[in-house]
Length: 153
Length: 153
Length: 153
Length: 153
Image (cartoon, rainbow over all chains, first blue to last red; front, side, top):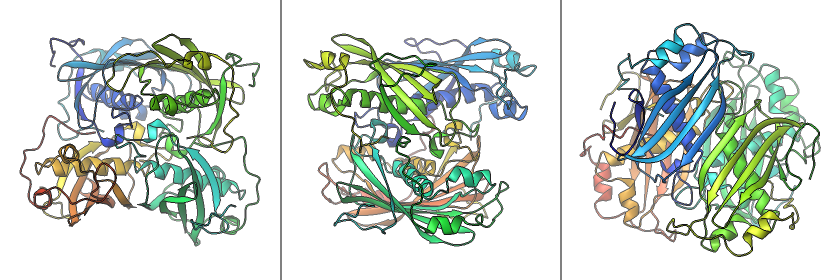
């Protein structure tokens, strides 16, 4: 886990590199704000995958983690063809909910910060507990090797 | 159904007006090409709704219409805040498949033409016949009143 | 301006109706969370247009309003083909920044609440004052007629 | 350049791995059709980058390559969390236009085929010749090393 002097994120944050597409930009020449939430999703999935708890596996156990709150602070714009670092980490976790926080940076400069809160629900949308072992795995260190040939979004 | 002198579409095409959002544009200052397929979907759903055959109703009968082919020809660009006309019509229909064609215009000038081909399948993805009555309804004239307070996308 | 008993928004909120597309949904069968920010944009543009201050006109004066903060609280999911009301209003405005708040509802039931903060900047991204008259117009009542044939997104 | 027995693409096709996000799926549980055009863009940019002719560099020379035609054939669906191979190659190139073709596959099985045609234009949208050396570079083999730490989209 890298840690640039000028940006701050927890030691156990996961890092995913993404590249800005033309599709992500708008007529102001910068990334349209809502696209960062897409990258937050990619960072979150990467964080879980690196801990052996793929989101798709959780769903296969009948537990879904819909977003109940989403937030982003935009500090600097990203532009076409930028290669960005998407850091993700768990900033709060209980038995029936969890919160992910994110930092998107470029060359060690912070661009966007954000978070998403998720509730654990079953297929009917009723609140349920996170599956046994999941909170522990998610709060722990990376255990799986980076999925090197399965890039991202 | 309007028919501008300079654009051509069948008499029974449906028309839907949409407005270009910032989200639809890219750094070249024009609408990113793939977004027209989203508007094609809106035009297609509008065409069906105006004939009393909502797509959601077809799905409730266990029949899905996934896209097997999509095409677009881009003649002129659309820009932010443009109000566009999306014309849609059935250009081919059989028992297990159908084809929609589209024309997107602005002030009577053609911007984009395209089409999508759809196969009728069941929930397991197996080919099935279109539900009884659907081909006839889709090939016919508008029968339902325009859903005036249910704009679009 | 309608005001349903069960939802709350200021008297001068603008209302825009949108329809959920297939493109907006995800495999959980509901609207993917980031798409609401697209509708927030549509609601915001509609609010401004109804006060005679189109966002595109502001940009033509060399002033841009990039988003510096975005937030959404998801109370209930929206699904395919839903017709939603997007209410938008100014919840804070100063000389160099403003905040829009949003409520998305269906049949008078609140689904999503959110806000976006915007900074006024020039073409080089430097902070500037909002053009003369804009704060007053935006804080005031609707003055332009609804752009009836220019639906939305 | 890999070449799976069951899929066919030219020797000099470039390959990019992408992972399907929740954001890419729709309520049918598969990737929404227009999202493949986004991946086509990523594949196309990757192809160019690997030949030392980044698209952003071409734009810096005042030449743009807007899409004038886009097409896709959908053979099999992709689902959430799939890791896909996006192959891209030049299938036609002249002095003022070019055509890219694409193949998206999973585990060596073809899912989607498509192409995009591009016109070379200047900042005012007038047809211009492709910059000197570009056609030759694009028609040639990979010359730049894969941008290993600049994943994709």
